[in-house]
Image (cartoon, rainbow, N blue to C red; front, top):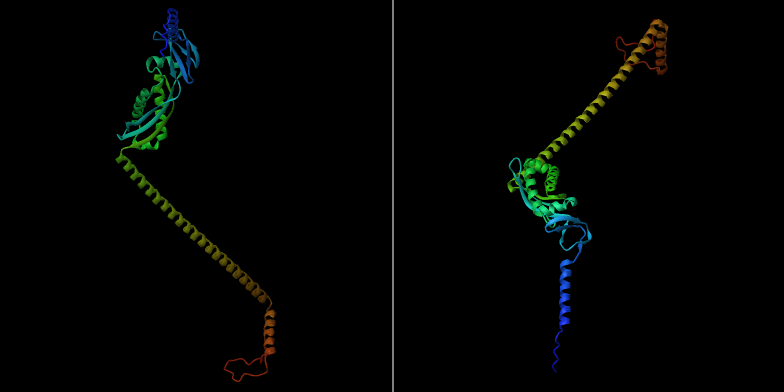
Length: 297
């Protein structure tokens, strides 16, 4: 069965044409635009910047154009940036720089450097230049020992440099900091020697401390023995003085009263007589006294 052919009427064709024209007009003259979060809308009129729109809805006449410009934090990776120390040692580093466009300089950056807020190429070039300039101020040992200060110098110099492009530095991550292989071997050898030297010094200090402790103990023991000897000598001297004083007093008393001496002699003879058993000695030697025989009495 063959369907009948429908021939459009002139009125239908006219309506279709009008609809197409309206759609084209709406597309070309659409006045509503959206600026996403973290962006600014740069309004241009025949190529000239005429305004900056904030986040949200923007309504523009058809002869103006809106371009979204990011002010969010961006990052630029700089791999193996090369420099040289003041003592001509080559050095490399990899860095990540996080930055954003200052909101009050969007027009300037859009006009001179980027239409979307991406300044990574400028940041990479500036970072490499700054790294070379900063490392040239330090010797290789200082570059290692004062890494925090080096990072601070790079940060300060890069902030000043990027401000020329309307960017502000958020932070810098410095990683893979390295020298030539031969120099790193030399550093490792030096560190090893320094550790051995410190170990030897510590051992020497320990031995010296032990020797000092032994000397102190010996001196204390010697002082104790001396104090003991001095005490014993003093005690002996005191006893001797006391005995001498007693003898002096006794002799003085005997000298003043001879009867006391005679009385003591009689007491001694009496004690002997009390202990005598009445037996005479079987042998008497010449000059030997006969007990209890006192002819003078």
